[in-house]
Amino acid sequence: MSAAISNVRPDPDKVLVDIVDYVMKYEVTSPLAYDTARNCLIDTLGCGLEALEYPACTKLLGPVVPGTVVPHGAKVPGTQFQLDPIQAAFNIGTMIRWLDFNDTWLAAEWGHPSDNLGGILATADWLSRNAVAAGKKPLLMRDVLTAMIKAHEIQGCIALENSFNKVGLDHVVLVKVASTAVVAQMLGLNREEIINAVSLAWVDGQALRTYRHAPNTGSRKSWAAGDATSRAVRLALIAKTGEMGYPSVLSAKGWGFYDVLFKGNEFKFQRPYGSYVMEHVLFKISYPAEFHSQTAVEAAMTLHQQLAQAGKTADDIKKVTIRTHEACIRIIDKKGPLNNPADRDHCVQYMVAVPLIYGRLTAADYEDIIAADPRIDALRDKIVCVEDTQFTKDYHDPEKRSIANAMTVELNDGTRLPEVVVEYPIGHKRRRADGIPLLEAKFRTNLARRFPKKQQDAILAVSLEQKTLEAMPVHEYVDLYVI
Image 1 (cartoon, one colour):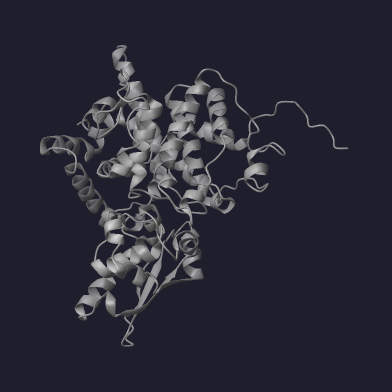
Image 2 (cartoon, helix red, strand yellow):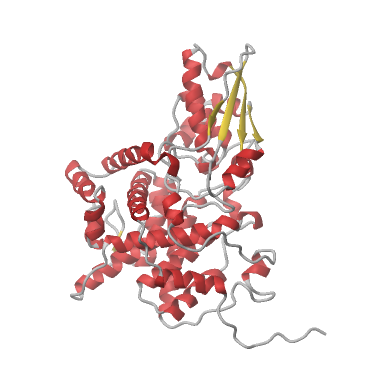
């Protein structure tokens, strides 16, 4: 007969306490973190604006009840929607993740820390509009950048040593946890209430990765983060009412997260929370492609040029070998039919075949009209991936954090082109000097998709100047994006 489980309520799990103490007490002093956060902000919003060109995205946006407008509600950039902060967070989060074209964090777990901006910006905008209506001071964009840095740090530091994908869970669990913590702090919750809120995020039940993998890959992967960050706002608001939390949500024997969902393992941590993740975050600048393929796409673009210079085309290719890291093989090495854009932008063979054939890779290249080109599937069948264990080691090395791919093309006539190796993508910290001008150009392009020139210029005048942006009230900045 087993011993009875003690009903003495335990102290909160240390993981919860560390997150909350960081959110409440840590002062971000790194100029690099704030500058990178500003670049992350504009890139993230720009990607959201591009997503508004896709009906598959816009059909999910707006209020739950058509026609609803919330007084002093949060506004959704690039639209005329003004919503409650929960639904606004879903809208913003869905927009910014739809095309999978902004920041990324790669470690034992991968993900997109900018996904937290949905909850952060919606909550900050809502709070600011209500503050002004009550004759009080609004939040400033520096507050948004600070929340972004802290949400990046929480999500990214947990991801460094803990693989949720290996137990079948989607990385948006970390979006929910990080967003809950920073949003709860913005809402003015006290320490105990924020601990309660974060415990609610962990106990909430977590998304499966089913929608990211064959044979079920589908468009939920494009709105899963919006769902997670909006749920975070909801949980923080619930905790604000004084609703209780669950202190041993992670460690409770038999019923906690570790035993139920993490194979009994406790989380491991490589470093304390600071501003490391924002400083080292990866930007997707050139290609809307799953990040483990970014360097492969760069290599494919180089090989396309070499083929052209030799008077050859993709039709002359007999075999393509991609020397890569283990995560690439596990996530995006995919054979067989690809059923939709979400399937295609998570297939390294597709993402390499398109630039080898066309000399480009854009969001539109995942749509059915391009995928119908029979040359793509024919070339996909000739592309094989092999793991290079050194590439895998360098991928996990905190001093390198490379995402290396090397590509060799063999032609029908027996010619073998020199292998093209790309260790660090253009969006890597080691290539910031090359990358940031291109990131700003990408932002300008995305603004031009939605706004007239006068409005573009007004957004740029604020967004490209660190001090100007940080000093601007949140609601005034968001208003610049209203159509």
